Length: 419
Image (cartoon, rainbow, N blue to C red; front, side, top):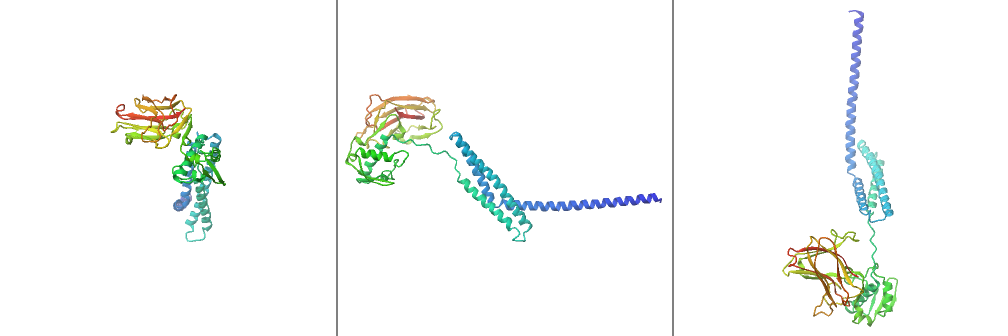
């Protein structure tokens, strides 16, 4: 063999050895990389499982859900608050969202550091103490954040409540004081706390509706009470005989205009009473541009009596046992009505409560007869010119019969008022 061939053979062997070494090194790298990757995957799985079971996850998810609820509340109130207030609430929610993002990020990092330490130093109890303390601090911060979010309530402030007309405040107070003095407490001396207190269904306890200091002064001026003692939170007074005696002093005085449902109650059910369904705050059929978006819905399915109706009475449930209202300055009753389908026949009237065995009676009765309703809102009028309105128990009423509504009827009313 020539010297040249021997040299080539040695080079081939040398190259083969180099390739073998490279292959061995490559295999070792792949092996160790795979082992490291497997170990890393196990570590990440351990971290994910450990952190997902911590209370902080519930705190953060709960806070996120609360922020979303408040954001939806804010959106629903967009048309109900002024622009400045809306921007203020929107910015407040945005600040909470930004704080949540930061807290979520820092809490996850703290838990991750602690979980990795736990994975790598499971045999040591002290090696991860610092990481665990930091994680627990973040967890407590998440809990406190959730508590703060829960206290955040985005809602419209309650609408201002209009006070009753002062004459009505005086009359209601007189009625209440007389009732307590003669029938309930049976005492000549009362206090303001008792007048506005929890004796039955009492709406006089609302300072938004009554100027009580002014009412008490006026009652004293008119001679109905004598003030005995004033304290910061109460007024004691003596009830005079002028208020305790029967007479016109105990009749409500209503000055037109006023809304019927504000003073009269739909308590006078008649005829097939069990076949009447009444909803005084129905939302899905209100008039266009109506302020409160509500109306009265009535459904009547004819029963054995063959007719039904409801009278709006004062006081509630009064068929003549108590005096009614004296209405001043009214010339007509205005109301709106429509049928569910059209063609419904309903009679509309006012007054007419005249039970022979009762002490008090309506001083008038008037009807506009049977009205055929359409399925569109129409304005109707009951004339009052020449009517005696000195004693009004039944302020408004409707009556429907089986003969005129064989399949029953559903109809709506709104805007019932004297003017």
